Length: 408
Image (cartoon, rainbow, N blue to C red; front, side, top):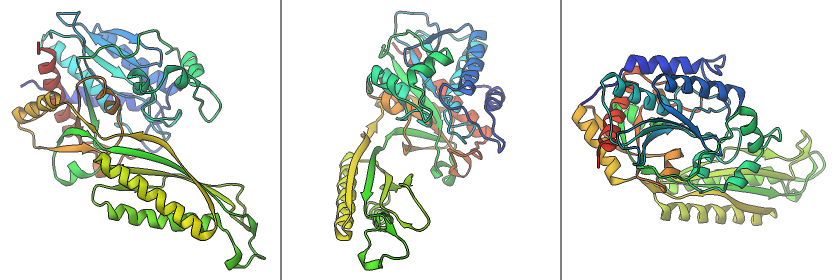
């Protein structure tokens, strides 16, 4: 089995980490910002050194291709993203892109050609930190999200996706939804399971279902000092009861059911005014579609029940639903064969986070390779990974992709 150059990969990760570096050791490269463009240009410069061709599609997805012996065949694609959270880490997404780069470098070092072309994809706005929804570039590529709708989306400053693409120089013309032979994405786990089990590699069998709800609760704003407690219609106290009930909902669907209230907004808040309108977001996750449906129904029921009891008006709107996604058996087998032949300890694992691979799985045979992150921490400036794990994950990616690229 082949080995990658772990030291070179780590050096590339550290060089990329200098682009948009934050004071606490993390990164800020919001999608299509000046920092994101600088990160893309650094990546492109490395690809051009390898003789790779560069293409950009209409939503700014970037593709670097290494030729195969048979250019008529669809490419085997690796990749992830280079954009980050506002206070993000050095590995989330970046590892998948630069592990792909190291695969190509290792193939060059060892003089290995492949039957099929190999590409590295950098997907636009995976994080969703600047433009909503997350995984936007891969959603447009796979035609989950219409291009024109995506181009009209605006960030918090009123800049549209179309304007940002033009300003960044990444408004390309390559066609969307072109054929891929397969897609492999290496990624940090973003959770604690692999580290807790002392394992360097996760063989990812699929992604869990995700349901996002937007909840708005309407009460009556009134004076904090003159309105008796029994006569109040306090939207925030109502939301507080809802959140406590939602935490219990997670226990009812344990251990795989996950419930998160990530954002809460008190409209026109004042220290001495009873909150009249409160909005919050609800993130529900489970490995099974039937369970996520049951969780959504239960969440809606308890929210409405509490609102009715308190004399509050409430609306619950579904913002997004991503069904549970099984990955391709043949791609999973390629990863499992690689990790077993290399002799690295591993386990099967289901992805708890959303990734571009979730969209790609509906377009072509797809799977992922996970490595641990220190403390299970991600979306944080302190996000970290161990060099040995980084190297082992890339070794697995290298051998899995090579086997697929020579499979006829």
